[in-house]
Image (cartoon, rainbow, N blue to C red; front, side, top):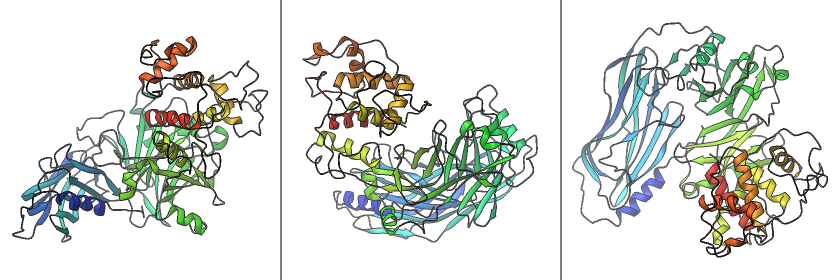
Length: 595
């Protein structure tokens, strides 16, 4: 990824600021430090796990550090952090960086290069001496000699600028062959099914992966998943039809794109909910089996999915300035060599891209967003796009392939600056394209929200989808109305039946309790919430008797979940919900129920 923003400046700034509050005790250096990398064993077999350690000698004034190293991605696979994809489980020396007293950002992986940064926090003194800095487990993939090379170490120093060591050091691991009970299938990118990188040496049906080494053609690294390999992957799940299968394509120097050929049989037999995770150095695509219609496949043999760095030369100067140096990726799909204009609202593809925020972005990570850029350079915000600091990745869902940009945007309005309790919610939702203002510069926070607007926002916030027949809405909702799709989805899902089954009254305001009932019903129908038939917790509000019987359970649930708090003493159930209040509620739903 071209956008490889280092965290050193931010961490070292923290070091400098924090050190200024520490004792003036001198930690004068007596010798230049040196650094080495080593393996726990000189030789292992395929499938075995080995620990790599980076160690410093004669280290002084170590308060924060940034380490860059490379590894042989053809023969080694790093162990991933539990519950993440593509994030190395780097373990810092906890004697140097105690848990709860450090700032650590998820490792940044770019091809075979890994960057890791961490700093102490609080009043901890700097470290010195001969110390282990970090360790990382690798699984051996293929026979041969595998190198890990330490490229640089930048460390914080008391009272002066950070020091940088760039002399380089490496260690070589010998990997010997081991029988796997079968041979890989023929063709480009042939590989073998290996246990996941847990290092246990046992087969886990839900975490087995297939490692593929691609071939480079016109800057695209191409790999093929053969029918035999696909059959092997699918057989590993037995009766479990909900597990993910993973195919990892190794990095290739000079590649600006990665493509995987998949037997069309994977998509034609789309029963069950098996998904294929395609991991590449540029990003991971999670592909459901039912993403393609049979009409798309016809009599095809292979489907090719690709991710590449997008060509932005046709973007307007205004768009280029808005995106800046943030990454832009281009997703494509081909069926037997022909590009397919894929679009499927029922079966979205999940995209995950490793991303290192800037220092400013780390202060407001909720404003790291995703834009869809169409062929004409028009931009649409992707509501599901978000950055996860735990994984160090930006993830979003899409129902069509095109160009997607990671951007940083804080969208605000002139009339929300004085409403601190709702400003953040409004700005985050607006930046993600979930909510709009009444004009480009004003939000109208005290305006009552209409029934149509709330339904539209609720559907957009939770990413709800449903099949509905054209015109199957309400008598007072036209197909040309901006809220037609959302209202139709809500009716199809059973969220609303309107006022009398025929009229929706889209422009009417909605009471706070009716909005809460609609919200809880939506969470139930989308399997995000299970009711406990409990209406307790309302006694703390002096107007609890004003809550209608049909709404008591829903209101109680939202109070218990911390989504609704009223004004502290009153719920005001019969009042109209304002746009600011609705934004606050939707923000709570977004952060609580959208992963």
